Amino acid sequence: MRSLWDEPAVANPPTRVWRDWLLVGVMIALAVVEALVRPDVTWRPVAFVVCVAIAFTLLWRRTRPLTVVLVAFGAATVLDLAASNSGPGQAGLYATAVLIVLPYAVCRWASGRDMVISIAFILLTHVLREVVNGRPVDLLVGFTFLLTPAALGLAVRYSISARSRQVQEYRLLEREQLARELHDTVAHHVSAIAIQAQAAQLISGSRPEAVEQALRTIESEATRALTEMRAMVGALRDGASADLAPQRGVADVARLADVSVATPTVRVEVTGDVTNLSPAVDAATYRLAQESVTNALRHARHATVVDVRVRADDANVSISVMDDGETVAAGRADKGYGLVGMAERVLLLGGTFDAGPRADRGWVVTAQLPRTDPDA
Image (cartoon, rainbow, N blue to C red):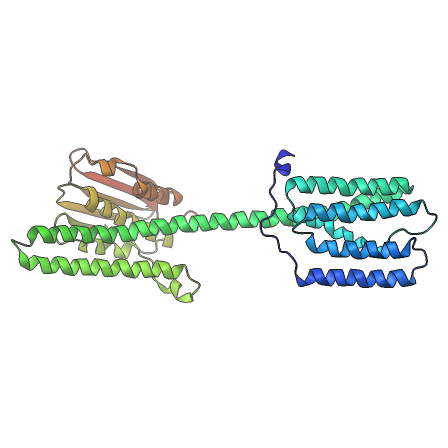
């Protein structure tokens, strides 16, 4: 009950749409016909005015549900109780039955506090009218008549709320995946550019001919980064062309050996049958190798070589990336976003992941993935 009481009102409810005006128009038309042709209406002019007033209050049933309930049901109840002491006849018009939309509206749009107060007031007025008029059978029928739309309003409200939460979760997952892709892809190319720029500065005096090669590598890596960034941005749009961009996989791991012409040298070895992998495993293998190489280029101080080895058998694909840099490197020992992202990616695919310093010198990242995505 506390959680229901604290439930906030639905944000940005629609104010008035054409259906609301149609509802008011139909209710007023029925009230006019009823007031003219029904012979058993007590206080005919008053009943007509009350019915028309109730019809117009329905225009605010989404934005001011509690106020509309108090005014509409209060007016109908006062009229019924006052007319019941004036002799036989019907106090209100049948057109006021449109009040049935209010229990739905209050449960669909109102806050929890307003919802509880409104439903309690609706039931209280119903009990009061039926007890005073001596209609116990109508008392039970009325409960069903009033609570059914209220239950429907709650069902619609929580169904839409659950769907909204699900959409929000999907958006968060997409953002997380996009952040990882940006980190894995752009950081890799930017690291290669930084390495090449540093190398060009070091060899500009002694080996001017190598500077040109370093500049070509910088241009190539910048072009790749820009291309992949455009593909990611395209994937966020509605255009069908975004699906045409191929996903990097094991076949692209060999390209990692081209990231640098200076130290550290990146060597790639792929053995075994790496065909017929599930798309998720194929992409994850490349991303793991790419991110590991990026980390090595960033943090492996005084490293001369980075070895990337991908081995596949009938059941699994194994990836190992090791370097011969200094063992102690604070930036690598810190469990940052890169290592956490790699570990999560591997665990989601049912594999194992480990990263840490080697026994003698350098850093090693190892992972093992099943050939088939367990969720496929």
